[in-house]
Amino acid sequence: MNFITQNDITNIPKLVAEALELKASPLAYNHLGKGKTLGLLFFNNSLRTRISTQKAAQNLGLDNIVLSASDGWKLEFEDGAVMNLDKSEHIKEAAAVMSQYFDILGIRAFPTLQNQIEDYNEKLFSAFQKYASIPILNLESSTQHPLQAVADLITIEEYKKVRKPKIVLSWAPHPKALPQAVPNSFAVWTQAAGYDLTITHPKGMELSPDFVGNATVEYNQEKAFEGADFIYTKNWSSFKDYGKPLQNHDNWMITQEKMALTNNGYFMHCLPVRRNVVVEDAVLDSRQSLTIQQANNRTFAAQAVLKRMLL
Ligand code: CP
Image (cartoon, protein in one colour):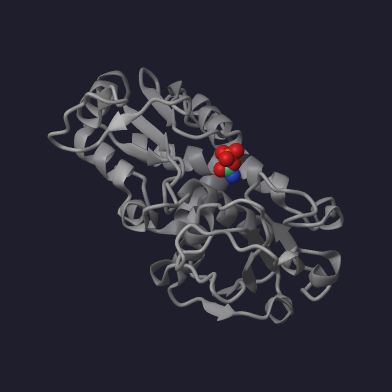
């Protein structure tokens, strides 16, 4: 079984329940990974994904080896390429060779934010899926961050006070152009789990319709916040004007005043977060912030997924 998108998981509420069972007894399945090795290939930096996935593997008795390729390891993807420039290894060999050493291969690779077609076709993940002979685990691809979304669903399950809470995904300012992977995944996974979702962002920052699905789009952030139980905040760059950041929208920062419009709602963010740019200290340091709980749940999200991949 690959784990690339929500379509690889049957019965998402059951996966969340399995993760909560593992959280209660992290070592209950520590025989499952015995004699097997998880490879973790990072083309970009990571704190949470790297450590939580290693911890999840460790809890399942699964050895893991991390390979950092963020220091300029350039792979060739084109068939028939004459490799006389800076790319020293073809994906065909790289994927096939790693398949000799590992039983599962996790990959993190951010989008270029230059070429929308290649990014949204998941060029790198598709190539690894084609040339590797072992299951692939998505540690954040160009368009999706499914392990983050599973951790977010676990956190919502733990803190919700009603069966169908009001969940709002809010754009927030950021000085750099960031991928759409986290909001894309949050949108599809919450809806696939049976929740209604409201997305609020400035005009022009619409996500891909494939990920928005049936969510309500509300351009008035304060109106969207009214009565909300969970405010999930994230910056993303433009999908339409692909990869361009939106400047001069500091008034979209999450503040105490805005949180006061909610139903004593919780604040969520995948981290890392820029304080007093995305969200002010008073919100992030409040009891309503669930960011550390989300980070903790990354371990059990990864463990629940790895457990299914090993069974
Ligand atoms: N949320 C998240 O994926 O964090 P890292 O980039 O540190 O892995």
